[in-house]
Image (cartoon, rainbow, N blue to C red; front, side):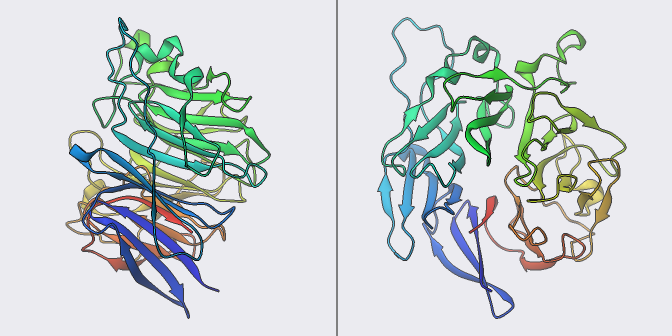
Amino acid sequence: MSQRAYLSTRKGLFELSKESGRWEFGPVHFLGEPVSMTLADRRDGALYAALNLGHFGVKLHRRHAGVETWTELPAPAYPPKPEGSEDKVEWNNRLVWSLEAGLPGQPGLLWAGTLPGGLFVSRDHGDSWQLVRSLWDVPERANWFGGGYDVPGIHSICVDPRDGRQLLVGVSCGGAWRSEDGGDSWALSATGMRADYMPPEMNENEEVQDPHRIVRCAGHPDVLWCQHHNGMWRSTDGGRRWQQITGVPLSHFGFAVAAHPTKGGTAWFVPAEADQRRIPVGAALAVLRTQDGGKSFEVLSKGLPQEHCYDLVYRHGLAVSDDGHTLLMGSTTGGVWISENGGDSWQTLSTSLPPVYAVTFG
């Protein structure tokens, strides 16, 4: 059975495919251009690629299934800032940081998260986009601030597979937000998280939390996992409340997390040394796996570099396929690894790619 994956990198979109039992690199799209995010739409086979061309702005392209050519689409764009607005953030799309498809019963519905913290929706396969003003206009947005960037951004969009109107988004730094009506209204949903970078009297403030990445278990949609700036959290009630995971080996800091598609107790994290260094712990790359809801962890490093390794894995740099045991990981220094046994062992696919921003299975 053939498999396909995509790597969004600083120098283009790289295709990976497995044919006859071997993973191989295929075509490179947008060679030399920064691709910030790629979405493989399982509903119709379309592929979407978001580019960040600096002076030339954010671009968005779509390729239909069975077609080799790409079509440029209008990128999500903010309306003009109202005159007299006291908003300190410029209403300008700097980056598409996340892309997510609606459910099979919602043809054409797409979501996009951007810097500086806006959520956009398309109902026509990306031909047009609208800013979700109900989230953009929440009063709490005035307290959001940048994490890895100097402005806030939406990096995680979790759609409930049982009901496409149930959404949860992650904001750095603005906490988690939940909608039960398709984005018409929103509620803060970061209860239980803790921000140690804030003064003690503010560290439980939901609107200043920095969830680095939030993912949902498709088979148990009430289970969500979060890699936070100050630790790892899990929710079992759809994100309404979060429980901190303790007793984590190596480090509780990192950016990436992947949830098993059917097992609510299984997830993978990539630990790192925090803040000043941001490298693998002890310069040795490893992946953490829990299979009991975060009560215990295994350190998985077989096949990964264990000496002089400085590869950092970004928020979207770890993905698990629908089979639940094939994982793909890409790093800031162009390392790419694949595991076909749930992380027990890893195979090096490349050590010389451009910095990898995101990986996804097709």
